[in-house]
Length: 372
Ligand code: NAD
Image (cartoon, rainbow, N blue to C red):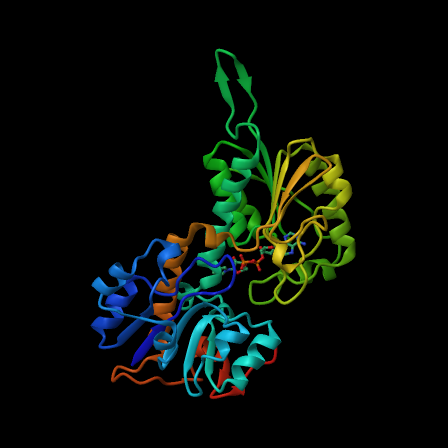
């Protein structure tokens, strides 16, 4: 099988879908790897490193001519023009982007969106949402610590004592847990909120305090159970009580990291403009939900803005700022997924009996399999 790894062209995308490690493994299984020259440079992988691992280095047309294409981001309109009918594409294609999926169907390809894999134990090794959210949670704290004009840890020095930073984390999925762990390592005092009550134990085991908002109705309890491990929109009554609790913590906080998402919907508003106004000058908010509208309405995607003396960081692609490790983990996720679609004799098969393959399949030979 000829496998192509084109360069990513979306602005700010620094990751690459294969690494010398995964190239070597695919070569050992008898596949031919063709990597576009420069595809790995922004992730600190040189053409020489790919070539040493056994890849052919080619121009863009050579990489796009492959039967199986490995990508980080879904192809742009101009990239789609390079796709040939009958090719298979694997990447983070955004299952909720109906325009992008339609484009792939028109291009006549078979396309797998890795974000659509179920959150099951068997799918864990190919769970791109987890591998990348983990990095985003870490980097969010790094950006906050960099922008914040004070220390994170409590310090007792000859020149006096410095108080530990107070960090509030809203949304404790994969990114939120890593944000808590990272801020904790830096010595911050942390409080966290999520709709899923099961998260309380995880928050406490990391040394943070859970902001308890008890359920008052069966409807609230049922909504908090979510679907497939994901959150559902919570009733207004619960959100109102959560907002009151969060407001008290945010007013005291030095740093707020928000990660709350509901798949396929706009992000819930958890930090209101009034809450931002209540914060101390010099505080920092990192809004990881910026691409979905933000957990704070004052967030502007891909910008850093100062509002009421508070810095709001609306980064939409934090894993791209840790490109080498983000690529290494992503490429391993891709390799694990390929084991489900590559046949030992070299061809590709679409096994709809496999729940992971079936969930990720967005288009099959030009036919749209899932409407966003
Ligand atoms: P996500 O990125 O979709 O959302 C981030 C967090 O925001 C979630 O914890 C969600 O509950 C929370 N949230 C949503 N609305 C909120 C609100 N109004 N207030 C506060 N928090 C709110 O989540 P994710 O990190 O992708 O994780 C989703 C689920 O999948 C979690 O239950 C996670 O533990 C689970 N998971 C399972 C596996 C596995 O079993 N293989 C792997 C990874 C994650």
